[in-house]
Amino acid sequence: MKRSRELRPLSSEHHQALLVAFQVKKGLEGHPEAAGAPRDLPGLLALARRFERQVFAPHAAAEEALLSPHLSTPDRERLAAEHVELKGLVEQARHAAPGPQRAALAAFAELLERHVRWEERELFPWAEAHLDAARLAQIGCELEERLVLSGQGPRGATR
Ligand SMILES: [Fe+2]
Image (cartoon, rainbow, N blue to C red; front, top):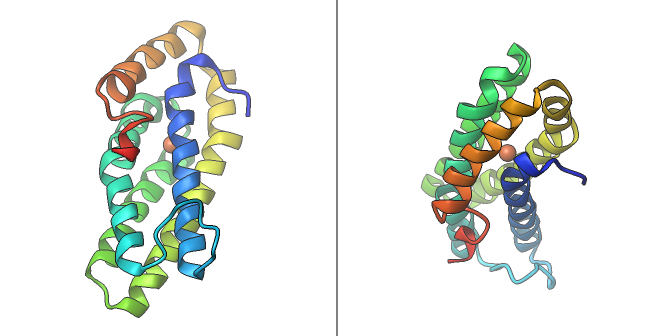
């Protein structure tokens, strides 16, 4: 996917998000090739929680602070609602018995993938087309600071 330099810190985390979604799905299926993911439920829950805390939470906060003010109302609401839902699914999985825990993790992986694809295919192209260069540059600088320079960026999830 072609992406403007300014939004690249978000896009590189989207790649991580898609990998986590893939690992959780394959892990839940007990698939032999789960891209290095754990296949037991506690391991998958730990993966989802670590991702949520280290990557997703600062990522979602940055999108809401920097992009949301420029979005249409429906897009802004969808962005926030899906962020809340994703966090909620991890919390739900954390406190559930094994059966519902599997279901919550599966729903988390499914929504995470759908959410990222929406942002990459619709939301970011829209922002790139409608925000002026100065605004995009400012967003880019703040993203660097929040996601890359803070150490919560692309390498955060593997620590
Ligand atoms: Fe995102």
